[in-house]
Image (cartoon, rainbow, N blue to C red; front, top):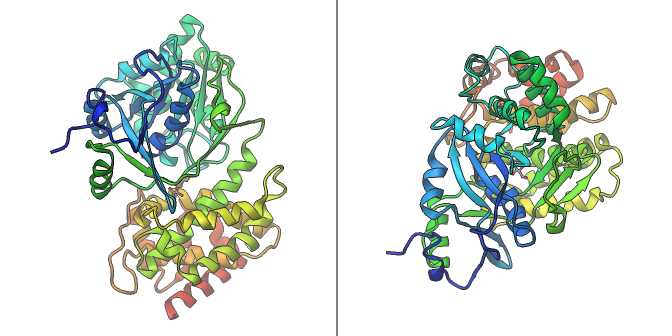
Length: 474
Ligand code: CS2
């Protein structure tokens, strides 16, 4: 039986593992990260791990807003874990020590407030998913009618939402006068602006003066993050443990590629992440738009069509000639015209690299992961393309086909009779409308929370209905 990875079993690690490269004990904390999942561990924590070798003031206090699972796995390992970059050139394994500890918010909300309020914290990063922002139907404002927001307004000292924690901590920071920067790392357009709006609106409902202080003393940065990180499976853990010589229950498998573009607006000083490959720019919005409408939308296309074809991983879907040529045409003819000029980016190369990344057969990214929460993803990844194309009278045939495929997918079973795993906050309404669409395809477009007023656009409805019928007839 192998030993568990921890600070006392480092000598048992095989040579294949790149060491952390700094003295973790000597390093101090400078960042609080809210939402510690696999993505954070393979992305921001890796950039920060590389930075800690040069500047040891930026260890991360991680927060789980809900489940204790990751803390329970990380804590016995002294928060050490490996990241495995997997490609045709083999596995590159690095030990990551950037995370100091994991706090579980529901167990001890005050510990989270204190960590954010701590003077040494200069930056808070967020990966709380598209749903975690507590937005209303407009997508731009706080949903004051949601129970969790109402609860936080009633008990601001033991919050549950990210905004509740930030505002409670800012209340303490206001006394000490310590400024703070918050970076959203979720797949939302203008994610920093949205975060700022939600936090200020929440603060304003509690204490307008505090909202005022936050406005002047907390900066919110847009950021575009990119790295494909599948969910770690039990097989991955067994395989990695074999490779590294000790058991690592927190290992994360990922692709070699990683990108982080951050708006340079840090009111309290910042980590020099540019020294380890991040880009600081004045305006992140064009990068976000490109990534959301090409990479993330590309993922949704491969996921939804792949599920209908009976595949279970993204690389399988990408290797299907019909699906991949469909995706290329969608990217070239329908997305590219909506992107305008992206200074410094070669779009042709970007699209080419996406096709390569999607096809990486060493990364078994689960179609179930990609299709989960599609009701929150489609409005961000696909609808902006449709709306712009409709405005400019560009082609929308492929986009309409994707929505039709999503309607058929949402029935929950593919043509081979295989059950599809629909993991979605709107699962019931998706399923109900998907079934109604068999008789009247347009029924699916009636889900206003996803499609807005698209059902009233005759050009779109025509293309969608045609695509729907094409799919069911073939
Ligand atoms: C995926 C993303 O969740 C999804 O649908 O498209 O998780 C994607 O893998 C990352 O954004 C890649 O940077």
